[in-house]
Amino acid sequence: MAEMTYAQALREALCLEMDADPRVILLGEDIAAYGGSFKVTEGLLERYGPERVRDTPIAENTIVGLGTGAALVGLRPVVEIMFMDFIGLAVDQIVNHAAKFHYMYGGQKPVPLVIRTPAGGGRGYGPTHSQSLEAWFMHTPGLKIACPATPADAKGLLLSAMRDPNPVLFVENKLLYGQRGEVPEGDTPVPLGVSRVAREGGDLTIVTYSRMVGESLIAAEALEAQQGISATVIDLRCLCPLDLEPVVASVTETGRCLLVAEDYQTGSVAAEVGFQIAERCFEYLEAPLRRVCGLDVPIPCARELEDVVLPTRSRIASAAFELATF
Image (cartoon, rainbow, N blue to C red; front, side, top):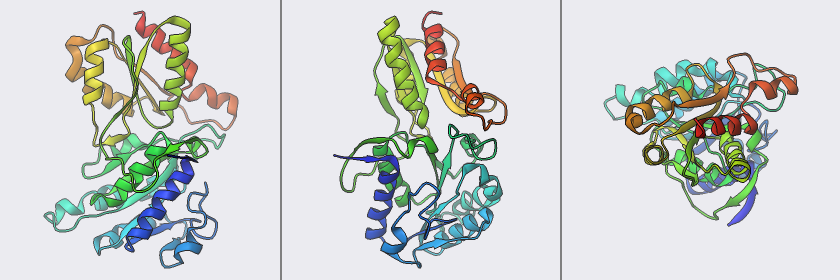
């Protein structure tokens, strides 16, 4: 194991794959000379040259279209959308092209494309630079979605994404880039579509992903220390494909389930996951499903207001206590 930040783990994955496979290229705004808005690709231009690490115009639809075309002719592009809020400009290329071509061409043309994008709030960036929009893309057959919560998973899931024959939307929460953690050395992919039990407990089940995994773990530790209530915390890791087997096993035992996600509550990831849990675990539930999500309002710039809008460990702990004592 080596200790590194989430951003360093992503960079290590990119370097491992670019060293091993000359077909891997990087495309995006300010990813080359500047090293990316969050410095994930810093130093890669010098290491791999301008043929493989390319700055693009500010044109998200073009960036993803270029990546899709490159994937169709045999390359393995990793494109970056600087902020997930900008991904709306590329929805046509993602939803109607990258995710569909393999099906439309009868399985003859895979699209091995990775779309990396920073998401989430907590930095005071305001309503157009702070959103978590991954629920939009759960509605798209043919597209995989990875949302790593730890440096180890950032590296391992990105390695798997770059090797997958399908397009993968790789969502990186901005507040995680500086988070440090132990990361396995060498070529250590983490399979897409396999959930992780991050904490064991017997009183309720917390289901979450991305940055909310860490917040949920802190809330669960506080809840047990202060109230004697023990929670299982399950990190989904990927939203497509969605692995609910550990969730079903845990909810069957605890009878209570809290879903935590940073995105807006209406039509959220938690809504879809919660309904699937209800379909599979209804007879075991001893209390209604509960959600802690972002509020259905634009995300403010003011940090005090942002703290009200986004899920927090205190909101998670309060909801978990109420659910456990229902």
